[in-house]
Length: 127
Image (cartoon, rainbow, N blue to C red; front, top):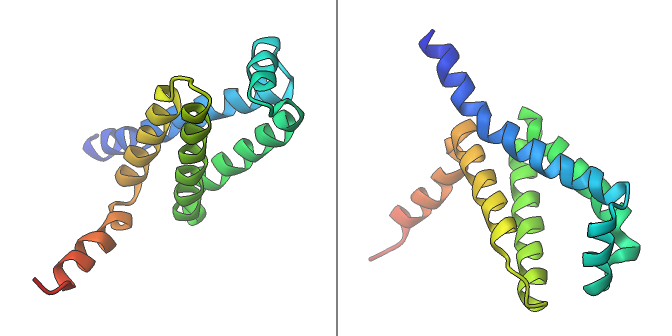
């Protein structure tokens, strides 16, 4: 039972990220009117479908264990860019930051070795 509980806790943040980003992607692909209005204001309405498809692709890469590290890197860049766009247009960038935080938590729970490189490099640096 302990192993099962550990597996559930390990995959829960990944499921939440996948659900949130997946729903966001679908809403962009079907051009939901509130999103069309928002994307019109920031000048990206013609790219909504492409952005939605890209989000689905990135989440798929992140979900698969074999490509999780690449998906982690790409989702980090994606939501970093989303925060920059929100910030540059005077909008609140909390939502992309929260998703990015969940991506990092999910990646750490699934494979803590992603962050061991940083620790190893820090120890190798001369004082």
